[in-house]
Image 1 (tube, rainbow, N blue to C red):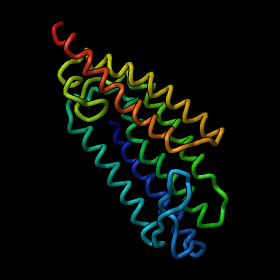
Image 2: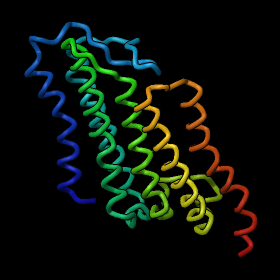
Image 3: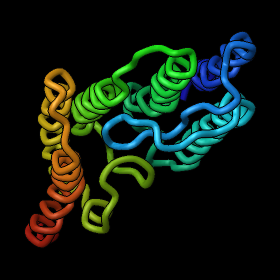
Image 4: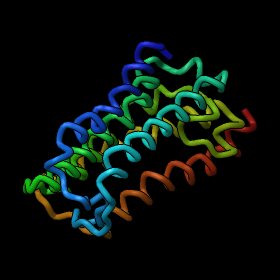
Length: 211
């Protein structure tokens, strides 16, 4: 991983903290920090926790991801674009989260459900596009016994997973535009993305094991 990219992507996680300090006098004592599936606030935190603790928590998650990738020898050989995607997941999520949190706190009218639905769709499309290029490793990807034991199974599984994620990503993105999100849709997408590739890898493993 590029040290410059690691440092820059991690520092961007502290921008919401800076914005919070600048907006401090205008922010309410209690701020919405958790939202339900429909984008309605259902959890609140005090101003200090929101402005300081949340960015620090995301920075810790970011550094944990960096440490996990840097320690795994197989992950060292990953495509540089995949590594960059990993580094920018937390900053992008952080930016979207704090735009919504600060926007609502300042009285803005945000369709939070649509924003996060669109963000999830875009992430699915981007990650799915690079799934087939993800080499066998112990940190990133569909890490089940069958894929970790057989490189051919790993490659075939990730080619399928990539296609599924891109298709689901476009479905989620379209849903955000039409605003017809339903809890059942999210469950179905999670099941398809998570379980279909795993089941597929288990099915093809016995055949490829003999090769």
